[in-house]
Amino acid sequence: MKYRLILHFVLVSVLLSAGCSQQTPTTNQNENLTVSLLYPTEKTEIEMGQTLKGIIKVLDEQGKVVENVQVTLKVSDPAGKLVVSLPSMFGSGDVYRTDTWTIPHRVQEGVWTLTAEAKTGAHQGIASQTFRVNSSVSEMLLNKYGFWVDSPGLRGIVPTLAKEQGDAQNGDVIWGGIIPAQHVFPESWLEVLWREGNFNLASAQAVRDFIFNTLGNPGNYPLRSLESFEQVRFKKWDAWKVKARGQLSRYDEEWMIFYAPEVNKTYALGTTVVLAPVGIDAHATLRNSFEPHPEIQASGTAPKPLPKLLPPVELISPELGTRFFGVDQPIVLKWKPAKELAEDEYYLVSIDYNYEEGNPGIQYTTRETQFTLPESLYHLPNCGVFNWRVTLMHQTGLGQDGQPKGEPVSFNSLYWYVQWLYPPGEEAPFKPLCPNEQF
Image 1 (cartoon, rainbow, N blue to C red):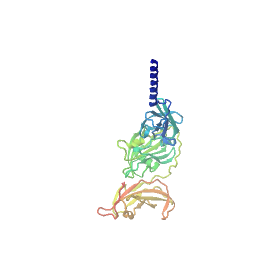
Image 2: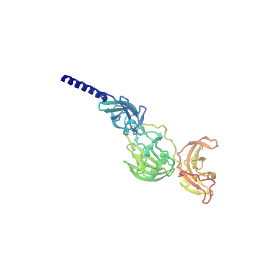
Image 3: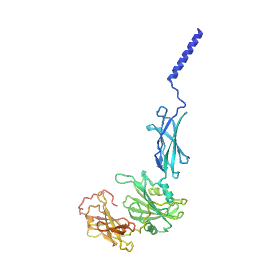
Image 4: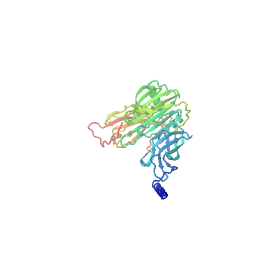
C-alpha cells in the first residue's frame, strides 16, 4: 500500500511539471536578430563636412520589432580603417537612430563602409553596406588652387560655387547662397581673388589701384564705391580692411586684402552678408578659416579663364546719389577717357531703373566721354532712381536698331546713380509703385 502511494505521488508530480512547461515557453538562446540599415543607403553621397545620421531597424525571428538591444553603427574609410563608432537609441518609427556625426574634412574620398551591430545577451545581428564620401568644395579649392576656406553657410544657407575663373597662379571664385524669403533674402557670399606677386600695398591708394587696375571690378553684386581703408592685422599678415558700398544698402560688404609671402600671392577676400546672424562678426566668420598651403603643389585650372580686360572706366560726375528736380537742368553723365579710342571702339552707357517689381534697362552708345540723360526717361513710370555705368567696347557689328554692338574691352565702371524726382508740389503722371529698396 505504501509503495502504491509513493508511485501515485511521483506520477502526479511528473504530470504537473509537464503542464507547467507547456504554459511558459522557453527562449531560444541561439535566436538571431535581423538588422536593416535604412539610411545611409548604397546610393547616398555625402560631402566631407556634411553630416550623417544612421537609421537602423532590428527584428526578431518572428519579424517583430526589438526595442531593448544595444545597436552600434561603425563607419570605416575606403582603406578599411575604423573612423567612428556611433551608438544609437530606439525611438519613433520603431527604429534606432544615431546622433548626428560630421564627416571630417581632408579624409579619403571614395566608397566607405557602414556596419550596424545589434546585441542583447546571446542574441545578435549584423548588417553592412556602403555609401560614398565626396570631396567638398573646400577640398577642391585646396587641391586646385592651394588654399583652404570653410563653407560660407551662415544661417543654414547651402552655398554653391557661383564663379570659378583662372588658375592656381591667378584666379577668382565666388561661393555662397541665399535663403528665399518673402521680401529680403538672407545671404552670405565669399569671394576669393588671388594674383601672383607682391603689389606693394603700402597705402590706401595702392590698395585702390590694386582693386581696380588689377582685379577689375570685383564683387558678387555691382559695386557703387569703396568707403574706407583701414590697416589691420589679418591672422599673421599685414592687411587692409576695406568697407564697400554695394548695389543696395542691405548688402553689407567688406574686403580683406593682403600679401602672403609664403606663396608669393596677393589675396583679396570679399564678404557680403544680408541679415547676418545676431551676436557674431559675420565677415570674420566667413573669412577667418582662410589659409594658403604652400606644401600643396597646386596646378589647377578653372572652367573659365580670367577675362583680359582694361581697368574700369573712371566716373566723374554727377557724384554718387546726386539729386535733381524736374527737367530744367540737363543731367550730364561724365567720365574719364579710358584710352584713345580706335575706330571700332565706343562707350556703352547702361541705364536701369525700378518700377513695381521690374528693373527695365536701356543702353546707349557714344564715342564721347559724356552723355545726357534723355528727358523721356523722366516721364516713364519709374521710382526716381536711375543707375548708370560705362563700359569701353569693341564693335563687332550693328544691332537691329542700327546701333553698334560688340564685346567689352574694359571692366564695367562703378555702379552710380542719380535721383531724378518731380519737384515738390508737382504730381508725377504715374502711380509711385515702388515696393523695393532703390539704393
